[in-house]
Image (cartoon, rainbow, N blue to C red; front, side, top):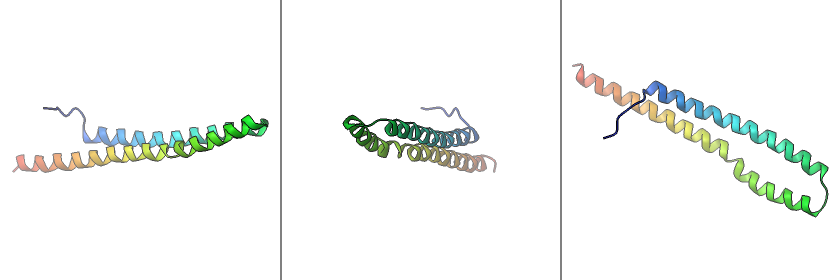
Length: 96
């Protein structure tokens, strides 16, 4: 049987931290876009065109990542809320 080693408050904080990472990832992706744009502006030729096309394909996938991470954080926070509610309801049963 699994043991519970975290409080709802700790779990909620962890979820908030994960949501914060989504913002950091978005910021990093924005910085990456600026760097890649600078490289593309300074580079001319067929190789540049190929690189740009590949980057655009990759960018579509990368741009989804902050939302995925934020979703994970929200799931963790949701689990914390459910955990807290269940714990509170169980406590009421024992405190009658």
